[in-house]
Image 1 (tube, rainbow, N blue to C red):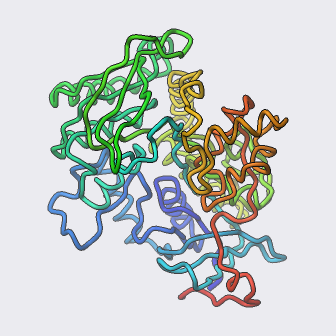
Image 2: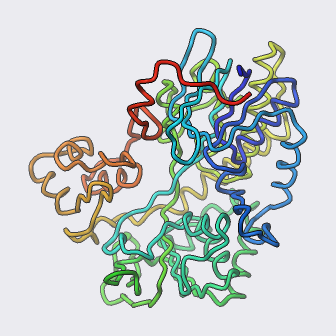
Image 3: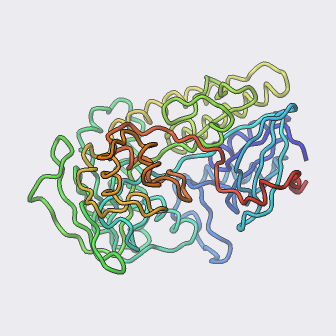
Length: 454
């Protein structure tokens, strides 16, 4: 069934955009890979566990309830379990190509006059010796287990890395009964103080997290980093150490923390694969948009983390603005400026920029990588192999990839791209991929994939 607007991604940005456009008379189809709407921020538990209080691991649950109820009452067509691998431009607009179901074998087409990309972001994890041990998970992975599976990754955890995501992960695990041995943050507290004016609106939220950390007696080690994870068959502990003002490990400050879980994360990066395949311009790692959230490709809007990492509140504001704009252009009416959302977006973007500046990864993290540290998990490429490629003359991540296969595996460099660039001494750059996810050859060979359910 042809639709006016295909919204890809059912997180905060996609939900807000779909509701705003639908309320203005536009036929909207909301497409998402998960089995339930909500995205990572509003990830819902599976029906099987029968959660008595599904709101417990969540922040701003009432906002989710308004979005959920609004979606149920709207005319938005919702297609979950649809894994979009490319958006094709056609003479009549666009065709969204997806793979249906958990096996991702059955192709589905969604024709649309316009497309709104709300594809979110993914975690950045910098490698360290031992990071491939069972028991080491990403910070977002630990949060997903808690929200979606109602399970905890272990009994005693260390939460480490940098960025504001570590706070809800540490407090969420502690509230679920996990003993959080430490929250290890590589940034110095003073960096937040430098951006006090831009972050003033975040103070109540930050104070709330601080109070919960104190209530659960979670030690906080600022300007510290994980040096190594220990264990044979699985994680048994980590060594952490203090960092000097240049971001190097201070000798003699190492300490061992026994744990069976390490939740590590170093910020997030925007998902831009679909935007890049459409030819949308990027601004750094993010999709470039104008004041209406339009990309430079006619008929394509983008909102949320894909246009820059900024959190759920910013994603909601951007989605609302994008939905208004898309509806106006599709109905050939004057754009509705949505002044409240515009004001909110400007304020939240300032906060997001301040947080990004306050939480940089350790400047010299690559110096701690031993030669046997795995960098590319898909192809099992070690730091030593990357360094050998550099000795052979490789001067950029692409040449390292050609010499070592780093980034050629299942994730196509999403996990290892930053690490390879760091070892190569060059700035990481977005990797242009033809498809947003692996596609079976049989699907590519089919001339006419079947249309999704109407």
